[in-house]
Image (tube, rainbow, N blue to C red; front, side, top):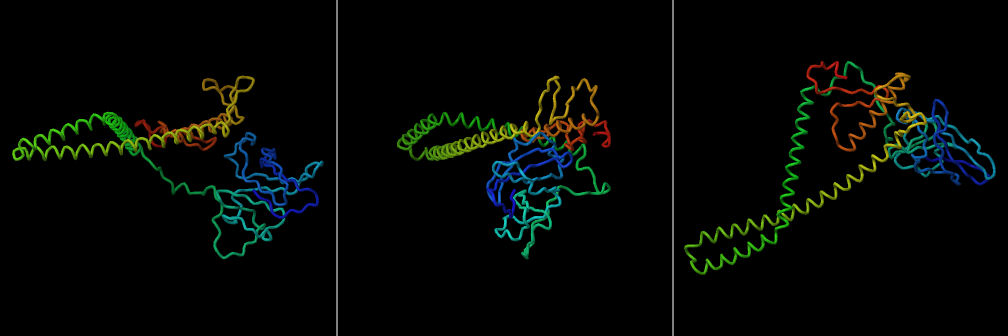
Length: 340
């Protein structure tokens, strides 16, 4: 985030804070920067207080000026609705005269955005599209993407693919075993070449066909040796890629507790993102709204784990927050309208 055109006679030290739009509670505060045009490259996620960030459509941004030895003073306060921002471009213009004083510029998805009326652009080329989070679609134009038979075929294809992967792995292990006995194969080839030379000296004419057979066998053994070396190189490359993928998955999974913190309070109750998660055997004292919100968080965590680990779920989940659903696609006795 950047701020454009600010003037102050004292030593300029600025920072910004983020607030929830409904409660005005401060959820994040940035570091101080001593410049007239401060530039905050990124937001430190670990310093954000627990809040349902997925449901936010806007945020309240307050910019503060803190002189040395004095209390912080409010410079400007913006109520930002993400769908109302206008694009500036992929590169921030160096001409700050096009911006009004105390203008906040945000970088989202590699494109700079600001509020309407704070930036004057006289360029003729078209600007990037506006930032959009979704669209409305009439219910009459929607239809199910899959049927029970289509999902059954999809599961059968996945099982066949898995079986093929197991066969490929067994073939690679067999080639590795052959790679170990390559010296013995070379010794056998040398012996066969010596036998061929002796046979040519003893009986050249009658053994011509046998000589051609030995030569063909020699060429085939050379081909097998070349293929074995190629498979060894491919196996090493595949192992490196697999190790990198495993490390990346562990890194992403380790960040899930930051997005959805699960803690146990002094009463022994578990909470996810500050919402009580009751025991599956006892729902007493828990409202339906609290239960829906907590289960919505759990559904989203399960979906993320399934995607990161590349493991298909038996029952598809739809992470729609407090309206999350689970669908039974395996039972043939249920109607399509009664599966969710």
